[in-house]
Length: 102
Length: 461
Image 1 (cartoon, each protein chain N blue to C red):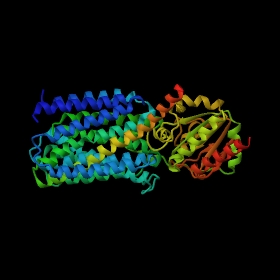
Image 2 (image 1 turned 60 degrees about the vertical axis):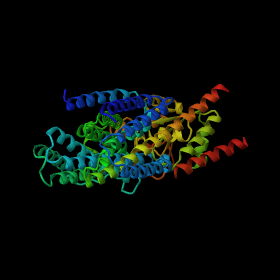
Image 3 (image 1 turned 90 degrees about the vertical axis):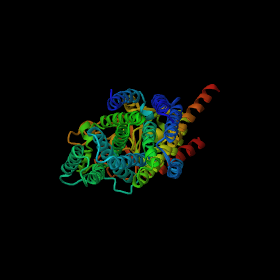
């Protein structure tokens, strides 16, 4: 198999996996889901890092640096806000459990 | 770091991303999911930083620092009500990154680019730049920097279709002649324009679909980057993201009774006002005192929140009302329409923020039969999702859309700023029903008024 074919295998299987997993997510959590997948889409950071650090050409370093900045905003903001959102869901549950216990 | 260790690190990181999504299936494990995602991202980034190609770290360090600072500030200071905007803005950053990397790769590799790589590059840059401007437009509309109403003109779909075809054509030419001059900048310009033009005709109420579609595009752009720079983790994460956004927009469009073609091409522009407000119909406006009295006499109340609750930051007030009524023995539930608000699950997040227990939040299908036996349906800033015209009026643009059947309740109290139609510009016959009482005012103040009224009477009694 060539590298391209392996890539296509990964892509197709991951897409199906994504459909199956995400189908299970209840409506209640659709906003956190969107926020989390948004954070994960910041994976563009990986490509940006190589571009910014490889020093192949000046313009590539500039574009890479901009890309690293943009995708870091995406990653850091995305994960932090998802957690902030989910903390609210959890706190509620802890309280309820306490109430049930008492 | 050698190639094998790198691929192994990427594999672990990919597995953690999948786990993150799996754990998001339940509120009890959801935070663990975020942690898994964070660790996955950290592993991918650290492994990448150790790659032998990277020879200089100074710019990386600066960019990481600046990005992390801005990202943190955005996460900490954005109020929950601004969540849809923030997600839209975040998409635009991620997509911009992918598009910039694609642009750089094109100029670095030119003119010896294989047909396959050029295809991937074309997809990466087209979707990346399109998502960049499209998400910025969505952000502007949600932040009310731009007009929220759909902006439409004649031949709009024709223009859009023409531009998309032009972009595809340019990619095809570039595949044949990767070294062709000026074509690539033109592709960028067209993609940027398409992003703007696709979102301009879409009203604020349709934003959930747009945002999740942009999520999908950003993911696919990242996956395409994975093919360009031979990086499996990008392909995995991009595919997960692409399928997630795609599935969510499918769910959303189904909930709004839109065809999927409509969603893909953003052609919601047709949703225009039919606007003939029938003559001679009257609405019954009510006072806080009267509304409070009706609520006090009720034994079951169903609250139907909408975007108006988010705009007025009324979720906390709604919670107080919920507490008060529950304490007085009233059974209070919340009816959540799948597209209420500006993003999927928007109402759930806001009410969770206000500490409303999430088992009180009911999906549309579960709650609809309960309206028949419910004493009061309290509509807080929701409009189109409660519009009975969706059932009765075949000429209505939302005909066939599933709605919350609040008109089946014994009494309906609608809290609304004014009689202005919602974003879709559709008149709502619910407001003219004899059993409907309109409580005009800001949602937050109106609810707090009800709380005051109810608690003062309770204190006397």
